[in-house]
Length: 160
Image (cartoon, rainbow, N blue to C red; front, side, top):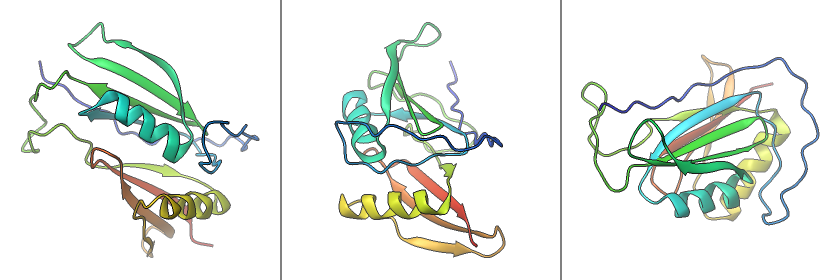
């Protein structure tokens, strides 16, 4: 069965609400303006820990998929949901000519400037390389970083 992943950025016009800081982590609080990523991972427990400790997300649900031979965990927080999918070590077919190694090509999150700066600083403190760059055509500042499985995650903020 061909497995596809969703990496859709869902923008909302909602006002940012105060978020409670997760007691188990020093990860910065940020409010995405709506985002969802689904990522195939090689170690579900390690990936859950990475997203909890680096982005301050928490497990919303975890269990075996009823649709495919996989275990999944959905983490949430800051108007962001990340679904981690573990296929029990199996390499599954990918879309088009994509590499056979399960991975996300890239997913993104749009955040206010103060949150952007806080997340970038925290990732640097944790030893996660995330160099900030300017995209003139898009009118944004951005940084890209890799999670524990090498998946690319990108944060954006308006360049104002």
